Image 1 (cartoon, rainbow, N blue to C red):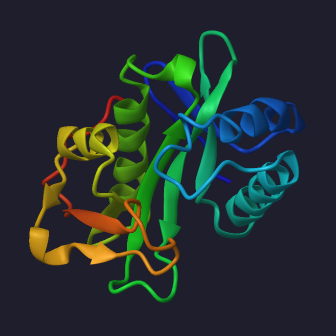
Image 2: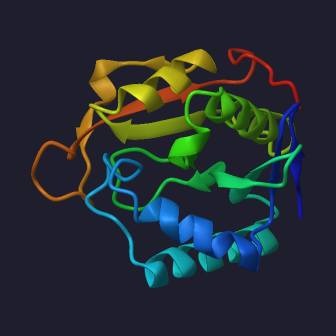
Length: 183
């Protein structure tokens, strides 16, 4: 299984010790602001188990992210095939960090590592990122790593109930158009 290292981060397999901070992160309404709701500890544990299973099976997916200098778990980042039922196909990059990790450039650093991996190791022809239209922080990360946005790709996420979180945007990145990471 692949681990990804950057100047400050380790993207690695999931550990039992990640479950409590992962559940706390997913119970934080601010972290889950652009999702339909917070997760229970059981839902968080189930997602971590799925993520770990994908890493073992494929060698890539949603990695746990830790600060290399301290070993502190701060969230997740990775790549995953776009879910069925979406109006597009491909592989999606994503990230989610605990609030204390915000504002340090970790999301951008982790995102660069995963797109580097996707292009260099997996040979992907394109990597997508998807978020609700109002998630300006995530959209800023997408722009920082070189992704482009076309309003023609906007869509209503079929997995999200009617309301302000349903309108979604797609950012796209092709090999050679990204800003290579530091990992």
